Image (cartoon, rainbow, N blue to C red; front, side):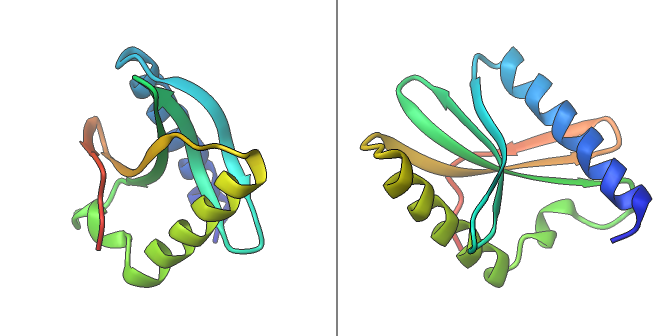
Length: 112
């Protein structure tokens, strides 16, 4: 990953957090790491724990296609680890927030 991709990712996550806060989400954590992978944003709203994967691009292709089966499986393992580590027993879901230029597409409760 080049420096421009890295910085673009940080800016994308900053925009995602701003978007989520405007929608009433409370951000609990960013960039949660485990040996299984990383969760970009962990937030809560209406007693539901949201694990948010952020995809950011300035290219022409569909952003959502960047979440493949392998990445999805890593996210699920990381979520399970987070829940056991933190002792959460709340409802939760995995969301995908796609940012392309000025457009934001928020996909709720995704699965593959």
